[in-house]
Each structure stands twice: as C-alpha cells, then as structure tokens.
Image 1 (cartoon, rainbow, N blue to C red):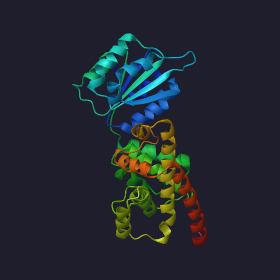
Image 2 (tube, one colour; image 1 turned 180 degrees about the vertical axis):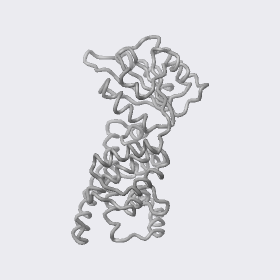
Image 3 (cartoon, rainbow, N blue to C red; image 1 turned 60 degrees about the horizontal axis):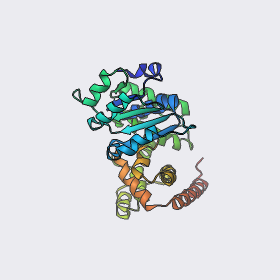
Image 4 (cartoon, rainbow, N blue to C red; image 1 turned 45 degrees about the vertical axis):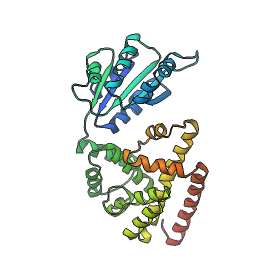
Length: 314
C-alpha cells in the first residue's frame, strides 16, 4: 500500500509490521525512522544489511521467533534492500509475525522493481517513497535549526551553505552541526569562518586536514598544510574540528565494545556518516585505541584553553 510521508504517522497501527522506505532522500528516510517509527514502536532496535540476512537466513528467522516473557517489541532495519530479499519478506508477511516491525531501506527502486511492486499492491504493508529535497525545504530545515540554537549567520552565508550542500540534507545537517559546535565560542559566525569550518570550500578544508592527521597519513597531512596558509585566527576553528571528530571517534570506538562489526557501527551512527567519509573513519578507528582518543580529547581541550588565554579570544 502506497502511503505518502505526511500521512504516515496518522496511518500507523498495530496491524502493519512491514515498511518499505525508498528513494534518493536518504537523509529524510533516516529522520522518518528516528522521529516517527522508532518512538512509536520499540526500544529494541536491530540493524542488518540485506546480504547479512540472506547469508545467515536461518539465524535471522530464528531470532524473529525467539522471545522471552519480558521481551519488548523489536524493530528490525534492513539496509540496502533490493529484489533479492523479496521472497523472504513475502514469506514473513504470510506468516503474520507478531512483536516485530521490519523496515526495509532502499535507494532508487525503478517501477519494474518486484520489491517495490509487492509493497505498493499489498494492503498489509506500507510503501513510502522519498523524493529529492527542494531549495525551499532545505532552507526551512536550516532556518529552524539555526533559530533553535540561537545562531546568527547572514542570508548570504545561509544561501551558500544550502547551494553547496547539493540538495543533500545529510550534507546540510552535518555542516549545521559543525557550525553549532563552533557557535559555542560566538553566536554570530561570518562567511569566511563557515568556509574554513565546513566541507563546503573548494580550496580550504580543515575537515580533510584533521581527517588525514587522525588517520596518521603523514604525507597527505603535510601536503594540505603546505597548500594552505593558516592564520592565527584559524586556531580555534581547527581545534574545534579536532574535538568534534575525536568525540565522534570516541562514540564509535565505545560502540565497538558491544558490537565488533565495524561497518554496522558506522552505518548506524547518528548523525549519519557520509559514504565518502567511511573509509577514512575506518582507518582512524583501526589506528587509534579508545584510550588514545580519550587522551587526545583531554590534550586538545588544554590546547584550546592556552590558545584562548594567549590570543585573548572570548
């Protein structure tokens, strides 16, 4: 059954256990899962890749039916769903499993997709398409975020951020979170600071510099330093970039204690990690231990205090 996103929340009920969320807007799909589906149903959340389920089908099926008296309802998220998993899903729908909600996340599914056709035509399942954001919808998102955080940037800066996020709300939200962290130093942020702070500048990128440094890629780090002229005013931006990335690594490294599957820990992280950043983050996690990350956070905090003290930064 096709359900439009604005109608999803009011149509949720206990009888619907299967959801197909597909389309190019992966950021909005994640928001929908986090804000509408997760709170509505469950605390027990499990995330799998489609190939994991197909390769370990018996174990997956057994986990669906193995429950203790105290078990709460489960939410299972299947990533990168395709026609390959259709027969498994059709079988589960026929068996009318209870106590479990299953969400299948997919990218673009053409009209000829068997998975999409099944979810569109069967009244016992929900099929929700997600379309590209418009400039206006991204502007609305950014304005609400900045207003809620009491952050001031110029209309020129806001337009620049949205234009350079290339219609991708994940890109936009990641950059807004960087601005939020930097805003702890000052509530009005200029365009030149935004260019240095975010991934949006073509020729000056603190984020890339810090990524290569944390991955211990000495040659690339030196090349970036040689290609750019940092000024003393850039110190706090660079420090905040280090802290933000180290804190993310700390959460990821802590998550690896409970789940040894590095790909799963990274793919389920919030805010969502962009595909292009995943490999460098894997290298960072394989290079730095949790204790090393914690020690570096402490050292960077001390450096920030020293910089502020000697440069009279408010």
